[in-house]
Image (cartoon, rainbow, N blue to C red):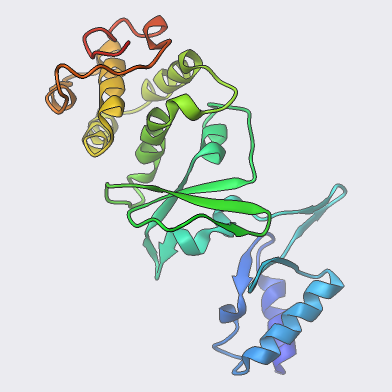
Length: 240
């Protein structure tokens, strides 16, 4: 099979919205130049679209135009390294997905142990937040939730009261082992996150919270205006 036929055949078998690079064909096509030319020809003809330098995707076509890949596809090389999870999606896209805001954005935020400067990929601005906890499949969801508490004052188009209501709604559906895990992970977050989580868990009467309480400075105050409208436990956790 000719290299151009192999590339076309491989792309035809890819799911719509899948992002790929030159490397996806290098095991069968020795010439990188041939791959580049073939992909550029296919992009010019509309069979594929270029996301950014060296990155392409197979678009899903609708009556309203071509759909873009999912954000996870767009940054998948930043989320995994040789099959190991090294990052997770967070920020506005996750707040929207979890029902905390209706706002959408062309920015993508990623939590990682080692961060790098912000950059642009296609129409998206990619930024990073430092995550001190181990990142694995089991931890991604609780870390996303803790990030909501971490940036609770920065979530657009929503009040702290409504954010807390939604957060409580989510926690009430979690099992005790999941609650224990989120408490453990919170220990590597800022004191304000630990205090707010402790106040929420105590409000819900979700077992022991001494792990969080003992990690806090008893004289530090946390300014989270509006939290006391939802939580009756704010004074005990020095939240004002």
